[in-house]
Image (cartoon, rainbow, N blue to C red; front, side, top):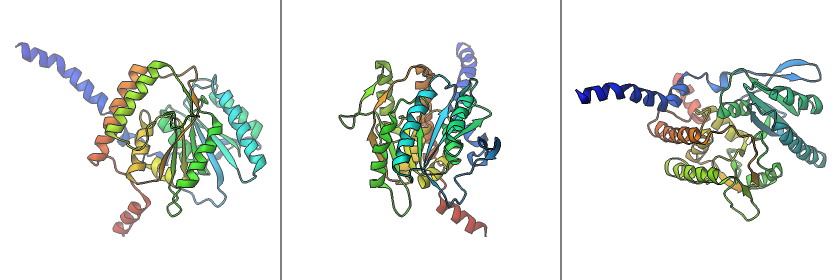
Length: 329
């Protein structure tokens, strides 16, 4: 009788844990396909809404660099990052007219003035340089980055956080490494900013408990998913257009651990992949809750490894799509 009562009491808890653990898998099949979304931006010169281009369209006049900035309630932190970034980009453009760029601010369902602040920069610099992509509902950082990347025009695409924690000048280091590793035949290449002290000049300033969390997480990442990158979570990653198109088209996780899934796919596809030390400092105002983050990221790591190992999630490349098309014929 005691055991029967215990089972009855535990069943709801077991059911809840199963539901919680499988949430990312269920969402990956119920979410709208990432490529199915269409978005518009405000053309500040004509004050009209214009559709964003997509990464799948053939474009003859690609710009050099797209910066994708996921932003959720970032009105207090975004202005410093935008000022520093635009100053850096404008100086590069003046010294080399080929250094064309765009910044896509992806407002991930913010409830503050994030969109208004983004549009103020679009008005000042023009919508060819700064565009705001507003999501009606919060999709998570991964979903926001995914939509920004899939609607970008750059030959190279930089994922960068809205808080400006990484020094934008370190983009030069990422580009230097990209020139060394980019595959001339496939166009693949991924360079990841790192806070892992890969060189003496790289400095990381963070609170001790965040460091403990980071090192524990890295151990799990190495064990379950990514072997070649020590710091998978730095929000400063540079992709070639060819790499971004495949990786973000196949991305399943739209919240926690999406960075790990991207790098897991890049390793699986043998894309040139390199880690470069950057200067980073913790910016006040983070919305991360450490205990919740630890549980969710641990869960998602297991999900990534399990789903790709069992074939629940698959990576579709242009070659695979071509084979599928031929079979249908």
